[in-house]
Structure formats: structure tokens, C-alpha cells
Length: 430
Image 1 (cartoon, one colour):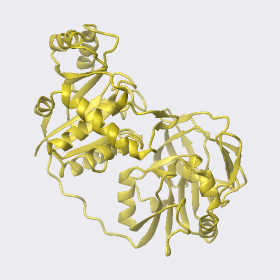
Image 2 (cartoon, rainbow, N blue to C red; image 1 turned 120 degrees about the horizontal axis):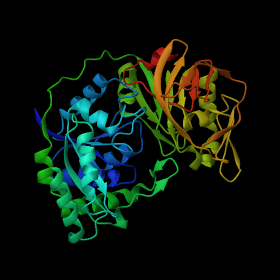
Image 3 (cartoon, rainbow, N blue to C red; image 1 turned 90 degrees about the vertical axis):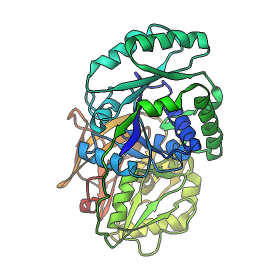
Image 4 (cartoon, helix red, strand yellow; image 1 turned 90 degrees about the horizontal axis):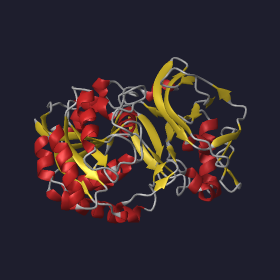
């Protein structure tokens, strides 16, 4: 089948990939196209913005946490229902877990789709030529089909940049002027995911920005590729009742993880902030990451929910808790101002948002005979590591041992790691 599909990449972070991606997704949606968004790497925040812009789910394509075959399967499966595949890269185009492994360049090669470069041109003119030349020729297996110049104020400035692209042999698709109204504010853990009422205005304005000065018809034309027709895999649905915490405090999901959980049984969403108890009949509880630190009072005051989860864990119920979910299962969380809030107390460790220190990176994790890959990104720290059993071990992408612990109590497993089980049966972990 012929579809337009491409990776949006840049020489470095901060070039405007996310803003251009969401604007382009909405512009395509308005035109009557069916855009399908994807995100290179382990980020779980950018896909949220994609979904608002494209009105459909966004999937992670991570060639470090999963195999290339798995990446191709997810992409081609989702593209059966779309006509434009938009894959947002991460960091710089060739930045991966180790050299370029898992990078935007790696994904483009794996999927055999072209790249559209986003260049921050606010401080360059014709010097864009050698930059573009280098990216075009560094890896001859990658097709850089076009370039969009960002932060360009005038047509005169753009004329120099357009000449640079032409002399290198890369199609110039247009430029984007600076516009504070489409700026997405940063938060210490990535892009903001609250204040949802502001999204629509930002996304709408970003689309108008794209439509004014980017040639979308040309973009679609030069990125048309042949993609395979595939059928979704048949799955025998299991009988587990799986309850997933999903609200403003807990919402960092890899979409394919949820699909795998649906293969294990019936999935029910619930809110630790707003609901009284976990759903009746729960066999497995998934507490993902998120921003619990911004809802500490609500979480702490919801005594019935705390007791419900504690009782479930004490009785041997299966619980997987990641990052914010792991913090929630502890005795308490201390906010940035030093106020301590009681939590589920299934584990007796304590965590704090004071004395923030970034811990970041891919992880190779072994828990007993269960091996899986994941990602770690947090600023909070333990103030008391407690007395729970520590199980498993982890190392980073370079094979260096990671300090982060995996806790286990009965059938509850908790850690800072965000696991990716798109190719795994997470039920085998317990």
C-alpha cells in the first residue's frame, strides 16, 4: 500500500520538533487526512500531545527496548488505518542509547521511510548548507527527503536557507516564524501534561502556523512510500481482571503495554485520586508513573483507596508499580516544601521531592528469570529505603550497574523503572 510516512528529526534537542509535529498532525487532520502519530524512544509525554492533535493514539517506536521486528510490526499495523505516518524523533537525529541505537536515524532505517529535518535557523543563513550536507551524507542508507527551517522571521532570511538546501539537494518545505502562542512550557519531567484546556488553543494555532508557510502537499508527495499490508495478530484473550490507575496523577503509559494487558484479560481504568476503592474482582493492579507529587493531599486524604490497595497487596494480589506508582505504594511522599503525606504503606520506604537529582537512562533489568528492558527518568529520591525485599538487578545501556532498586512484597513489585513489555508477557514476572 502507498502511504506518506516520515520521521521528523533534528540535529539537536530544542529545535522545535514537538511543536512542528503537533501542528502538522492537526493540519493533516483538518485536511481530511488520517494521520498516525508515533514517537521514537521511551518518552511518554510527547505522545500525549500527538493524541490531542491527531485525535488518535500515538505509539512509541523504541529499537532499544524492543526488537526491530516489533517496531516494524507496530508501525505497519497502525498504518493500516492511516494515510500519513508522522514519527517524531528524540534528541538529535543520531542520538541513541549507544551511538545511534534506538535513535531517529535507526527508526528511519528500520522502517525504510524518509526523514524530514527540522533546523533551528535563528542564528544561521547559508551556513545551513554544510550542516545539511553532513546529515545527508553521514549515513547513505537514510533518505533525508526535506527540511523545514524553524524560527525564521523573514522571507529574506528564508531565501538564504532555501538556497542552502537546494545546493545540497534537499527539498526545502518551508519555514516557521517564531510565535510564543505555540510554545509548550517545559516541566522538569518533560512537557506539561496538565492544563488540558490550553492544549486545543496551542494545537490549533500551531496548525495555522504550519499551513501558512509549509508546503504540505509537497511534503506528502516526497515522502510517499510502499508499506506492507499486514493483519493484526490473533490473540487468545486471558481471564485476568486488570485494573489500571489512570487519572491526572498517574498517566505515563506505553500504549502497546496496555494492548498486551488487554490480551491477558479485561482491563478497567480507575482513579486513585477520585474513586473510593479499586474495582471489584481485581486480579492485577497496574500503577504507572505520572505526577503524584502534584496531587499529594488528594491522594493522602483518600483513605478508603489507600486501604483498598494496601489490603489487596497484603492479601497477595498482583501489583506492578512504576516510578510515581512506586512512590504511591510507599509509606509517604514529601513534597518540595518539606510537607510529608501518608500513602498506601504497602512498602515502608519513603520518597521525597526535596533535594531533586536527575536519574535518567535506559535499563536492562533482571528480576529472577524474567529479563526486560525499560527506562528511568525521575528527580525524586528515597529518604528511607525501608526493609522490603530487594529483588533483581539492572544496568544501563553501556552495561554499567544501576543503583536503582526493585522492591517486592508478596506479589507486589515496585521500582522507578518504566518497563516496556510489548514483546513480553508481564504476567510471567510474578
